View 1 (cartoon, rainbow, N blue to C red):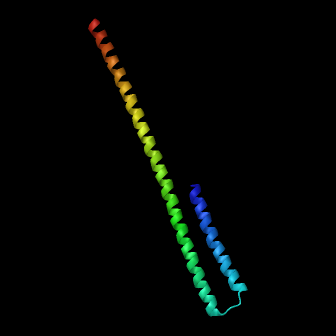
View 2 (view 1 turned 90 degrees about the horizontal axis):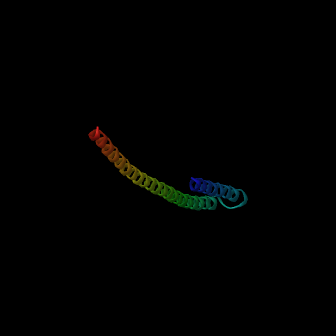
Amino acid sequence: MAHKILNRNTATALVAGALVGAGAALLFAPQSGRRTRQDIRLLADKVGNKAGAAKIQLQRSVDHIIGEAEEKILDAMNHGKEWTDTKMTELRRVFDAVRKTVSGEIKAA
């Protein structure tokens, strides 16, 4: 969960920084409209590439978190199965002992 929040914050900061930078460039750089449009296209490409990279990183983080959760769940299930098997064996032994005791009491009576 922390990875997801961190990656979302990183992506948001990245996009916000790019937009602020683009705005500042437009306000303070006296150049032709053609040149400005070209700069905007280049900046948009950079932002798109960085957003794509952030998306890939976020997906990797999510996959990692899901993988860890699956592993922990499977471990817990296996542990629970082992515990249940052990308790069932113990319970069968108790039932067998009770059967023998009751059977012996019935024969003795």
